[in-house]
Amino acid sequence: GGLLLDKTVVSHGGVAGGALDESKVKAKTGLPFESKPAATWDFDDCKNWMIEASKSIAKHWSQQSSGATGTASTNNGSNPAMAIPTGTKDELEGTLVEHTLVLCEYLEAELKNKTA
Image (tube, rainbow, N blue to C red):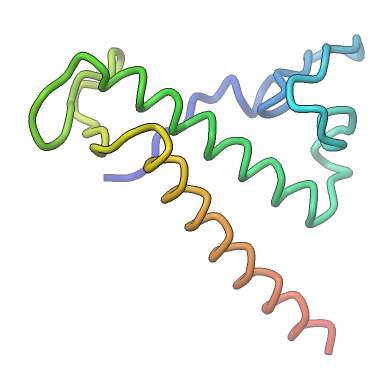
């Protein structure tokens, strides 16, 4: 299985839930990327967004599986075919953030190699 993302995250400006129009939306995390259009983000903004998205996904998974039993839950509402990993919210968040940081390290190394 792959990671299925709610397209409203992207279409509404990211984790912060930015509006499609130019109106201001109250910041949810207080991070700089929330006040900028995604097209103007630098690498750190992208990294911070990925970390915040990981936290949000872990929270969602934890809420979805809170009533489920067994090794992996398929109780995720709109997509019963997607298994939700087991673990506490903190464990899920830690795993996702760890994967995000590994990916970011790889991308950063690739960017440095291209500019060298």
